[in-house]
Image 1 (spheres, rainbow over the protein chains, first blue to last red):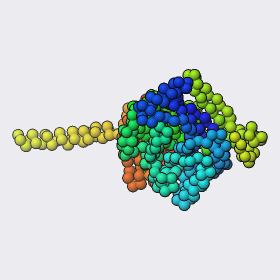
Image 2: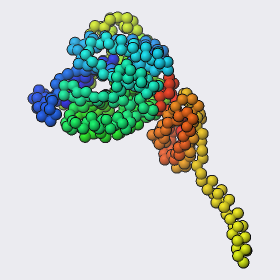
Image 3: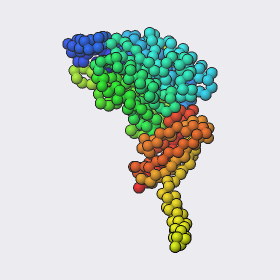
Image 4: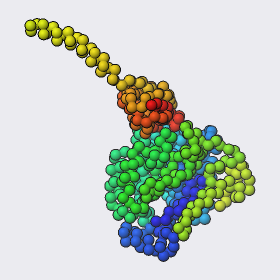
Length: 317
Length: 119
């Protein structure tokens, strides 16, 4: 399965195609997958958005939901409508006032509902579900872990934030084991969750306590991709044959952990570059070569202005 | 003769038992009290000796908190009214961060303490 990503800075657009580097290989791969799995992978696209923190207001980002709302405009301006959206947690910012938190969830639904997509699948982040163990999240968005099939790909939503410790937990691990049991080892699987399932930077809380147990259950499967949020920056990591991709946030960015010793601090907001670290990143695989192209999403080429004024102009992609 | 033996044993016991007790108490790990309160640990830094066990007695002054470090090998929840005791024997010298890994509110992300392990 080829898995190419177009990072919009405001989310990531994934294209799933049953091919490698040529139409002949694609056909052969498709046939092999159909024979093994019963259903061939059909080409389709989806988006990953993450960490909008609706309700957060103040430094380091004084713009509140502006980036999230801009992302919705960008999604709606895409030349090809994505099949669906995966939202990998921290939809809202936490509040100990239940009514206020509920209002933030309603506001999230209102903004996300403007996206011209058929379906939005969500998992919670600790800011959505840490205070009440996910009760309010379930009332607004449904279960915190589940799975579904789409065009020959099995999608698994994992919850690693609603238990007292940052873990998936024994009950969900048992559910995952049962869920995976009905698939052949060749089945294409996409896991989406909030926190990284490996130790990215534990002292910054970038880990899941029992992430190793999850990965051990997934290890026998040949085509697994993990998408997550939480770290407010794009990151690509490979463990064994499984790739993990982090999405950028829709509120503010964190720096590269390898370049910071000590305390985790957001990258300061720059009013002259309101979308700094929210760039376009294209990743494509062709003829065996990976091509990565970074393009800063200043939007000036669409809006004709620089800096914070861009936010007042409509985007027209 | 039997009475003399009894007295001798009694004298030995009164001398030996307290010495043994003292020796045992000197090998007991030191107990360090740590209090969690939104959004800090008190004390917020500790110095430990590599290979020397200590008992950390963890309590919370408000809500539930976490106490986690891969390097120090601690992974505890601290619930109100339920002090936790954990024995730690640092295996590696260096400076490490212990974090609260139970979401405890708006300042949770910066709730941490520093543990320095010396040779």
